[in-house]
Image (cartoon, rainbow, N blue to C red; front, side):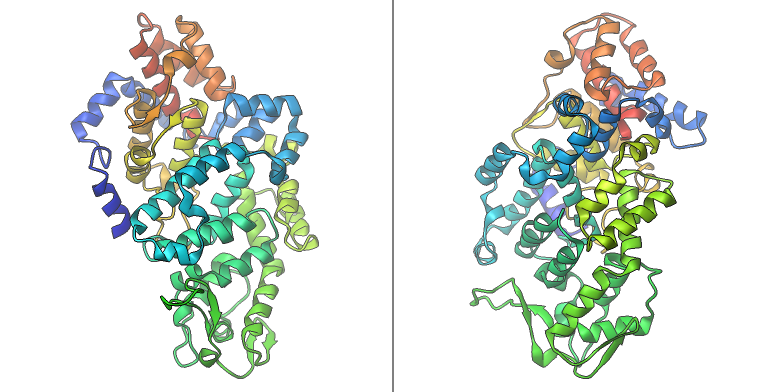
Length: 505
């Protein structure tokens, strides 16, 4: 790992970079972690499917199901809003995200992380790019927890992975500009605009080496990922020759790195680097026309039927999980093509009540798990150092740190083999071990200190009243062995957060 992340983790002071093995074991056992580990093992042994996969069968409320899937986790406020509005009005509210008042979150971001609104020139002139990187990471996490534009934030995350650019290679000024002005600006607009914005972004040109793609020394890295990962997909109908020809079409697409230039960090086209002559890509001819060749290629790929097929399948997997329903997939592809790649139009087709209620549970990635726990517990985050380096770093999910161009995986098989960081996060959060993160467990969950009352409160607040029977019984049994002290209540909340049901959404 670079470099950047490992250096940051060391610089934080090491308190949360990794917990000593004995301390971790002691924390888990004293807070109910043995019960959590036993429950994981029991569920895994008893089911042929992954533990927690059947959680969706307990989710009877359509609005709760919608909140689980299009937000970063259930919280009582969002459940109340969705329940009051109803399924379709709440969905439309989230689809029309620009009408949602998020001024409080915007003010906090502007105050705590002002560099997020700086120009490319200002970002490059900043002598403290180490903290500029932290500002980008922390402000991103802050929005994912507290923003009311929840579906929009989920789409920002989706496109950040789809058009991945890694902090391990790209400088912080380029990365910051890319996230703020490309991904966030077009996350719920039209796909052709988003694709073209990424293609013109200095961060992408640098990350995939198109800034070194010239007529004399063609480089196909960007051309390959443009086809395989960004548009038509690996089985999208192109050949190796098409990729080489596309690289020639895109030769000369670079960015200004001149330190004396106002345009530093911005796109530029170098005509002297561009390959002349006619090129042919996927049967389409591109007569010699400088930058316009690349613009035509992007337009063609952005609305290709195979692009519609590839993008809509990824969106279905994101919001409905497996298996992919072919009828829904066809409808989503038609919506994509008929609307000119309108992302909201596609989401509207996918996120119907019928589709969601028929969908299976999805395994939360570590970042989603952490944020959903913070949201459900109404935790107050005054700093983010320990959350990032004590939870996300051990789990391997620090924002913008995935090195390959395909983005962080969204598969159970990838994340499930490492449960310990996930369980540790639950216990660290419930017991207020994260620095400058306050979770009022006693106040939020302890209004009724009977085992029955505590179980009911935890079920209502963390699960919308839809905790699985097995997990609810395990929680009650843990609480029912003695007086429900503050310490036992914290252990119960930690056990609930670590339970199989909470690991899924």
